[in-house]
Structure formats: C-alpha cells, structure tokens
Amino acid sequence: MNRQASPIQLKRFAAEQTRRKLSRIEMLIRELSVGAAKLDEVIAAEEEIAGISNPKHFAYPCYAKAVALRRDNLRRSAENLKLQLDKARADLRDALADLTTVDALGECDRRVEAPSDPSGSRYASASPQ
Image (cartoon, rainbow, N blue to C red; front, top):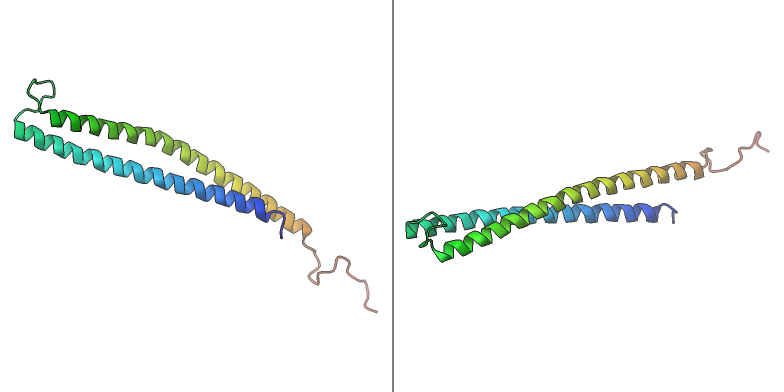
C-alpha cells in the first residue's frame, strides 16, 4: 500500500464531510425560509379575519402573535445558520487546500520513488552480455 494513500484518503473524507455539512446547512436555511414565508401567510390571514393588522392593538389576535413569534424564531435560526454556513465554506476551502497539498506531496513522492528507466531497473547496463 502506498504511504500517501491513507493521508490522501483522510483528507478526501474530511473534504466530503465538510461538503455534506455545507449542503445540510443550506437545506436547513431554505426550509426555515420557506417555513417563515408560510407563517407570514398565516399571520396575514389571521389579521384579515380579525380586521386588525397592528400587533400593538389590544384586540390583535393571540394566535397571530404566537405565529409571529414562531416566524421570528425561524428567521433568527436561519440567520444563525448563515453564520455557520460562512464558517463551513471557509472550512471547505481549507479542507480542499489541505487535500491539494497532500495530493501534490504524494505525487512528488511517487515521482521520487518511481524508477526513471522504463524497464524498471535502477541501473541500466552499458552493454548487453
């Protein structure tokens, strides 16, 4: 087994893990945004039914207040995930840079270990006997 195969495989695995984490975060952000948009629609419907759209009004529907709190929590969570997304992108860049470095080092080692004579012999004979 090649000495560099294991570190390269580990770096590839780390890069893939980071890539999967990145896609999960992006998916969660999309889901939270869609959920918040749906809650906006619910709030608008409640306000239309009650005929009151001012949340500070004494007769503003309690359900609309509760849904608005939930929507705000979803938006806050999405914002926090966006920060994690930025960090995950930086981690992915670092992991890919590490992978490139390890891969390049492995390639250099393979060139050094490979014989320059195509016959596979280290020492080329000057004349056949």
